[in-house]
Structures are given as structure tokens and as C-alpha cells.
Image 1 (cartoon, one colour):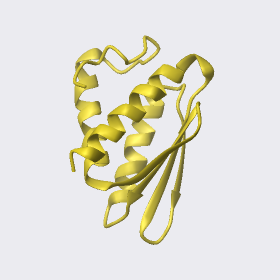
Image 2 (cartoon, rainbow, N blue to C red; image 1 turned 135 degrees about the vertical axis):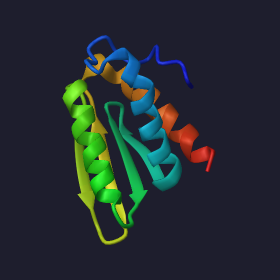
Image 3 (cartoon, one colour; image 1 turned 45 degrees about the horizontal axis):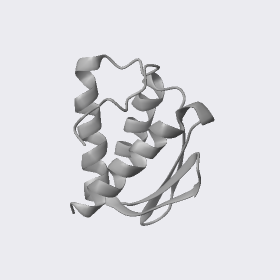
Length: 111
């Protein structure tokens, strides 16, 4: 899924930086994803394996993503060994969440 056509027009990240950001997310998912679920159409729930620096890495990515794609709502729930990451969008961006869920599942399968 290297095609970035799914990135919405409302994303303010410069076009040339988008592939780099996608690679960061893909790497996080490939390295740390332990489970994913879709409890509601507008809500994706991920569980990531914790470890040294992982929570900070997640928080950094979430902060930068929130800065360019304000339609995302992120909730981070750290525990001793796992980090919960809930991602929600509004109805207008459901297709973006669909694409993210597909990328996330693909990254997990590549482990």
C-alpha cells in the first residue's frame, strides 16, 4: 500500500513528507502491534507491546499526526507492558480510518 491516494486533502503535512510519516507508522505497527480491533466504524483500537522508549515514540507520532490531521482523535492508554492506542475520526473521514486499519493489519502480517 505505498500509494498515498488515501491521504485526505485536509492533511496539512507537506506532500513530500507524507511517505516518511507513513513509514514511521508502518514501522511502529510492524514492530509493536499485538492486536487490533474495530469496535465501531469510526473507532480503531490498537494494542502495542511496550518497552523502553515506546510510549514516548507513540506520543511523538500522535502529536505530530494531530498537528497535520486534526480530524484524528487519539487516546493513549499505557500500562505496564502494553500501550493502548485508540484512534477515532468523524463520519467524513471514515475512509481514512479504513485505509489506516488496512495498513495496520498489513504491517502486522509482515512481522
